[in-house]
Image 1 (cartoon, rainbow over the protein chains, first blue to last red):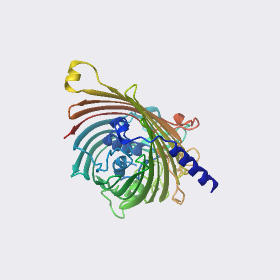
Image 2 (cartoon, rainbow over the protein chains, first blue to last red):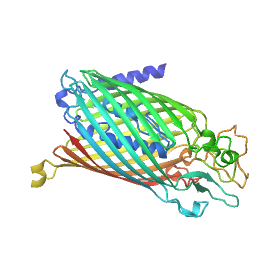
Image 3 (tube, chains in turn yellow, cyan):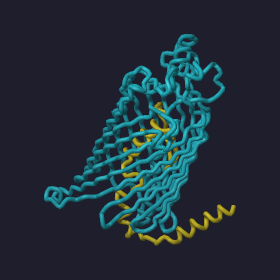
Image 4 (cartoon, rainbow over the protein chains, first blue to last red):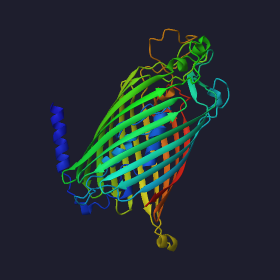
Length: 70
Length: 418
């Protein structure tokens, strides 16, 4: 319980330390190269290839559909 | 794997607060994309092949299609499809042959396979919320997979913070013996894994929760946790041990629980007109596998001040990247040593075992380079990757796993916005 409280306090203090960035100040954040998945098709294929060749999978979102490759 | 919800959550975990007003934040224009990828694995080493030849491993050609269409202001529809053509030999057994001291690999004969998949997704956008649903279908000669999922996201804290969550469910059917001869003792003896796996199935349910946070004008971070539970036939029916008959050579638990924790950061560098991506994933499962994955990418924008480029609005982006992966072995991974027992496996199949190198303790390194060129409404993409896996890369200097792959991947494609 102490760990949960400590983690919560750290999270709150970190978030409260963030500078408020107004929407009109978010030009750089809105650039394509700042998105989490810059190329959706490449991300899809990356997941497919690494899932087929490694013992791990997923992360970042709920697991997707399978195939006979693993 | 086609991550049906990856596309959804990519937008759900999009940089929070991008909507500059209370208007809906759906996509402003349609986009159609095509990608062609050529994937080729290194030949296996002849010195570690039990047939004494360098096996020509998989070559795969992939065609991907993507269409994103806004519908009115608050909705969007995405359709994505891919077609794969695969040819080559694959490792089906790893063992130490009798009279040898080193690990050898046994390969199945070269085969040709096709796979098609289709994903359809819809999304609705509010002022500070969005939600989506998607369905996925994949079919091969011997395998059918279905998956469906929903997800949602909400922006809070002056749109500085995005909270997101998702849920998906999947069901897979397999028929690895397409010409099953029911009751055939020969087929059961020669292809026991495939014979007994015919018409088997498995299902999975997966949940995710995430948080994204703007730190300042040039930095955003996110964290995401997922839990996935699989149940059903999780063994590899194609694993085949040439020295034993009537015994499946790959018996894995029928359940698998998986947890992941992903952390990511995107940092824009105004002075360089560049961006840095850093991602980390921790993976833990009930099979004893623990893995870490680190991805680093650097996006350098470049707009040459040459008349052709300036007159036509051509912008170029060069993106080098590195990926490092390391995993521990599954608790039931073992390399049979026929100097100890021959046959190593008997009809007592009550214990779990697999010599699949993907379940071993190893590491992998990948180097990537992408070059993207924007030209009016088009973006031309090119891509190259070199991947190599080895126990030593995972700081495992005591074992060998000659079946681990090394591959090259090359891709090109075109995006069109309209």
